[in-house]
Image 1 (cartoon, rainbow, N blue to C red):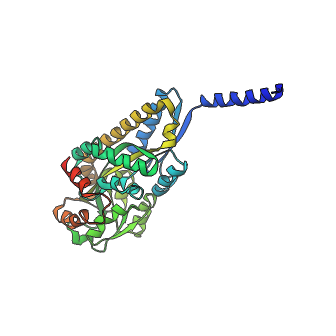
Image 2: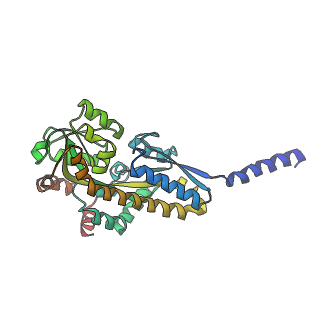
Length: 320
């Protein structure tokens, strides 16, 4: 090898060696507002990971659909456009159906049931199934809250929802509840909901109380109807390539993201407990309802042939 060629090869090798010392920078995308607990917790996680890895792993967090709507960021994991996302189990149903079981109407009994589920063998198996199907890994389950219907009139019984044009997320599981009670579900991106309600494009929407607050849906709806029809979760998902890129720091990334999931969950659950009084102070009518008739309307669908989970999955979840 000539001196010039040796120098060139040495320089190239030096660049590669130097590059290995650079921080691995990951993109974390989600659709929630900057003030939401989800975004604030993601920022905390990014800070913790940078600190605990001495800057070897850095995370930039992109809120409020700035890197795409929920369907798009799910697709982005597969092509490397994003590395980490918050997303609902109902959105990943199209990739691996059984993992969406926890998002089906009236299937979760409450926060304690949810806590047991997130550390259960069942959830671990479903997460593994999703990984096998996609090459993406679930690193945390986040409590999103019980979903309630907002509207401009009281909704007390299923017949009150007949023909109601209600915005739902663009995922199959979210169609079950409105279809069961004869409503007209209208899939729509999260970022478009406020304006659609304000302009009367849709008559209603459904979300947990903390989301109704931080998205200010109460400004354009007069009634919150406590249907509690879905106990919702979010998944924290990272692509295999992104996780592999963290090298020896993978354990730290896993630990911090799981801690972040619980931190956000506890904050959301606590806020749910106080928000009914807060909404009433804002002049919003909050309607307590008998959930029984709504549950009866949905039950045949939960045990039907069209659900993506098995009878065994259903029985094991109910037994937790």
